[in-house]
Length: 286
Image (cartoon, rainbow, N blue to C red; front, side, top):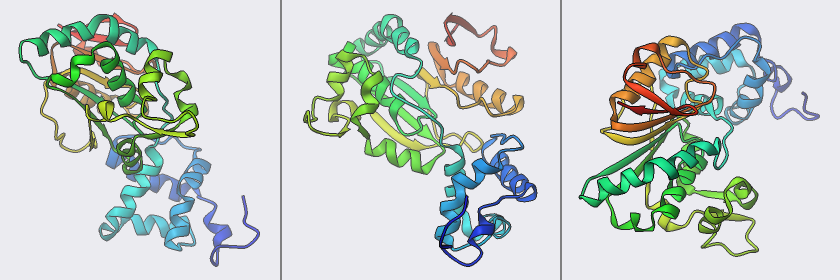
């Protein structure tokens, strides 16, 4: 990759990230987030971070590493982490989780709310919001009276850019193609047929609170949660960090609460006697 006109002197050099600087960036990422960036992903680092170098007018990754290692540049280090941790997501990803929620969980939540109980759900690793709004829309569709109950959904992520998108709750119409038709109509109720982008309706957004959370830092969560979705978050972390995350989630799961994880993830063996597998990558606390 080259530019016909360098955006600053030495720009061509900035487009290459050698193994030394790649390892330094990977080390920061692992220390800050627990995420392992496998060797050989130098080009990914370049593609994700080159905009930051351009903005900072930094001419090499060696200089960039020195910059983000400086405690005075904490915000730029956070932006780097945000760029390297933004993952692919879409509405109703792994739809069978939402099917299980509708068929086996919502009635339980109704009973809790019906006797004045507080109902809490958590989208842990919400990315740009598609997951949490899929969750909120499913609840609202199957439980219209939810607006009268004490029900809240916490949405957390480590990426400040993803959190900004989740708070805005505005998406291209084509992203809703994977949403079941009836629930898609609910999501589109405030949109005009000619709108290329749509904002989630207030009734859906009011169920959701979006917050920053880094699993490697103290968790500002209270619980207990009746439903936790933590899917494809721990997949690039080592066994120690995965155990830390899933054990921490379990500790905040209500009795008989449900935990959804990603299809490539596994719970640590220590939890095997504390949960029961009730569906694909779906566990209920016992």
